[in-house]
Length: 145
Ligand code: HEC
Image (cartoon, rainbow, N blue to C red):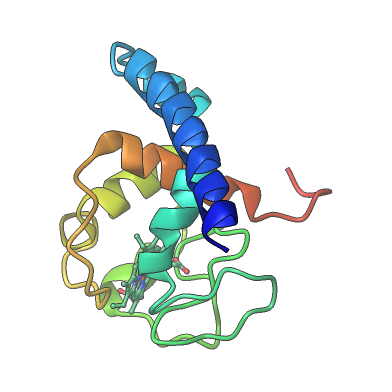
């Protein structure tokens, strides 16, 4: 048991070193696209655990205290008919969750949509946001863009 734990730790260390290298090299890039290119989907997945207290991420997943987030990238704001959105988000219904929109929302939800009911302070680290967005982008049907 101990030995396999050690091996697991070594593997994680190795993977982390690789991600760190990617993250460090992208620190010099100013474009968010560069950050997305270097984004760590596994780190984005880890970060999404925080969101999972309120959101489901699987296709057709239930509404919890937040709406389901499968396929949210490229979708309209406040798209889930079963969810009682705040007025703040409802009035943004025509807007699309682009990378820029999602980045601003995750940085500070209450600044992006003043009066939102999402009780989440925000992710300050731009690379964390890029990682999380890269993860959200994977939650799509293969035939959808
Ligand atoms: C404490 C619960 C909670 C947490 C934690 C939380 N959310 Fe939310 N989220 C909500 C609620 C509630 C709404 C609806 C907000 C509104 O109507 O103003 C929402 C809305 C959203 C929306 C808009 C969905 C749509 O249909 O337009 C996105 C995107 C989103 N959250 C992403 C995230 C991500 C990513 C995280 C993790 C970093 C996160 N949320 C963390 C509760 C939460």
